[in-house]
Image 1 (cartoon, rainbow, N blue to C red):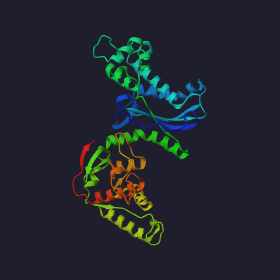
Image 2 (tube, rainbow, N blue to C red; image 1 turned 90 degrees about the vertical axis):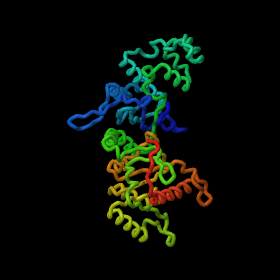
Image 3 (tube, rainbow, N blue to C red; image 1 turned 120 degrees about the vertical axis):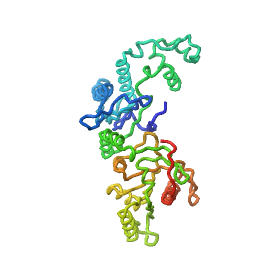
Image 4 (cartoon, rainbow, N blue to C red; image 1 turned 180 degrees about the vertical axis):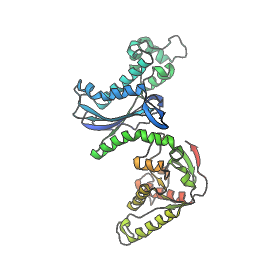
Length: 381
């Protein structure tokens, strides 16, 4: 089963104090935790019965862990149709690690899911392997002959073997969640506030994506000027009559001043804004230098049409942060992420996978996009 999780943070102390944004994903991305409903012509997201149980378990985490000597507190949480977000804080070093706590939560939810289907817990039901079936792999037949209950059998399987086993026994006997989970480690108080705001904002974001699919499109491969990009946002911006690249030096080539503080930058800025206000003009930039970043932020704040090129790939479950997400919802933003950026040519003898070459090549891509006159081709949504 493929997972959308990022890898855990190597070297981080998961027994120590910290704040974490946790994401649990339902196995197979089934929408079991929440559903969209309409009430008085207004759509909203509400937890299912299973989702309500998950929220209850999450709310009881502090009390349950206190019984084991672990001092934690839970903050914001939300059930989305196929995943769960929650913020948890470890107040003191623990005997358990964060993974143990999350495994306990996942196991409790899986037992609840099985109970709702009328099934006993895995330790109380016989394994479902038909030893007489010639299509059962030999390794599974051998293990099933030794471990008679499903719980004991699964505990003695490797991760790969469990995946094969779940494929054989069917959906209803599988754990509720993917094997792994995602944790984002909080850096500081500002990051903590952003984590909580992200969790609280998730339903609104989901409703916006449903309400305005044309300007909130995610495409994994869009063919444009002979290159492949991941895309998120309003693809119609690629059809606008005029696209202008914003590219600035970090320092003025003559005076050495920060370029964004010079009169030359001010004149360029005025020309960009005038072109935007004339209509049918889109700004294109990777926003690397401070001057480019200032122009990108002005576009986001004022709703000016913008194509933003980013280094980070756009994957099946990637989403932009709130400011860019809202700009997409307004129809004023398209985010493009080139595939194979590290395979573009070296710049000034510097390897292509370095930041120096990546940044120069991203500005080259912005130039290509501005001069592109064809039709973007969606290869994979």
